[in-house]
Image (cartoon, rainbow, N blue to C red):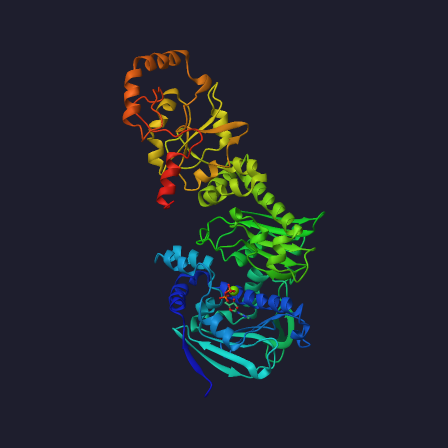
Length: 568
Ligand code: ADP
Ligand code: MG
């Protein structure tokens, strides 16, 4: 055909395809979930566009997805009457990866199949997962609003290139045809496909249909009729009653919206009524996504208005320090034509964000302070994955500071380990009689913190000190200044005031020493004139001859080092 063109995949896709086929083989059934989810996304997009342009429906407004198979041709097809794609869109969407974090993703691949499979899952292979079971994939599509002659066919064997040609397609929408590999023929069964759909895609809000099978007396076997039947429940999961949803359905829903292979750590499903009316279904993952530190990463929340999908990744719905939360918000109050700009201003959205943050913090608190040791261990795992992000909340979410402070975990001189397991509550419970402050030291590393000369007097007196070594800690400490009425105090600042912890003898010794060494002090001050503001006698050292301290209101030594390193 004259109009047929052969084009190359972007290099990343070639790499991804190779990797994916091998590492995802044990999860191969997800191809159907991914293709159905694309069909459902396409239907969501059409519904959204049609709010302002109803003619896009072309007298066919019953949105549905059809899954069919052909035992003779050995194909499975997935058809939707959603938004469809133009020729340019097919080339862009199915020939290149435009996702944010693509570079990070490829830099994280290790070559270890097990590890890479998880990463690939998080990255979301989507459409390309068809190549796990097919040795050739054909896509036929026509965009809503274009003419029948403006249809397009894309085809590839997943080996580095694809062809594209113009076709005539009467119906709007997209059909994906998988030409199965010989070893995948067991998928050519009504029963098999239905069970995969029910397992992975039951929550899809539009009908997923298959042709009914009937027993044929004459041929004495099951034959496929031309009558369609619904295979899924076809009501969006979050709109159902909690009691009608099984644990497994929640898990599969989470996996399908997050691309995670693992079940979530915990979730919360609520209908909120009152000042603003909305449904929230929020999941906390077990593992941090590969792009958690990508600054452009937005929250994993999808926004719906009265069951109509509005947008993905709406950062207005969740503060940045909870960006790892995945889920759905379905508002009854927002206008359907809401834009990102409107979201920024909306009081309803502010209310949703506050309510959702609180939910997430409560879920975490419930794990962290659970009587059940296994739950507390789960919280510790969560902390190890997400603790550094949660610390950002101390500055970002002032109204919830107290709650967040209760969730923090630190390394401590109490344990001989760099593991962050000590809560402020435990610290306070262990405080010595007469101790008024929560002491901490900040440093670049655990070893530096642990061996800091500032700790000597605390060791001698058996006072616990928290060892803070994360980059975000200094920043956090400018917001987190107290817990339960106990001030946080740096052991490296000011004229260390041990309060009632210093005994009489020590106070006398201090005065005595100051008298005795007046001359020496004066000489040292003179010598260090431009380098040190002051030179003092101290009893805080037991092994080291001297140490540097910062003034009460000055930046700490560690922060100065960090700022210097950052070129400030
Ligand atoms: P994702 O769904 O995460 O964007 P996919 O690899 O699943 O990634 O799909 C890539 C893109 O191809 C989609 O974003 C969409 O633009 C397009 N696409 C895939 N399937 C369809 C479909 N059935 N109808 C319309 N567009 C589709
Ligand atoms: Mg997809």
